[in-house]
Length: 99
Image (tube, rainbow, N blue to C red; front, side, top):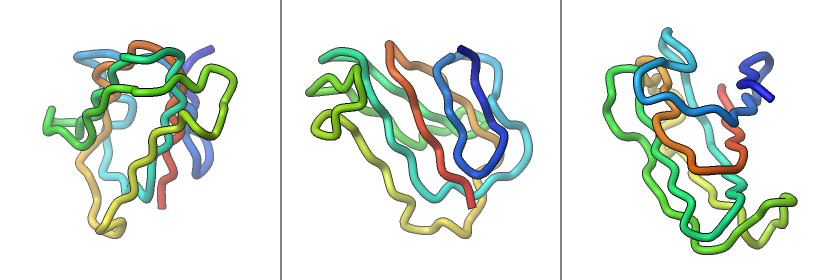
């Protein structure tokens, strides 16, 4: 599978330390990560490399078990991020809700 940024909910499974998923300003409402295994790492940055969310999975959710899903909610969803980069994702799928 490849990253899909069509629609309001992006489905991301491919990380890159140097290539942005999206290069324009974007409002991010929330993110939900379904990690494949315990100790998977996730690093999300804006398009300039500024950290947005960094987390390590404590429970796996390989088949989308709700108990293992890690969630991030934006306290200011109307303030745009300047680009979006999925810098690191050891495994799983990241769902990004844009606004």
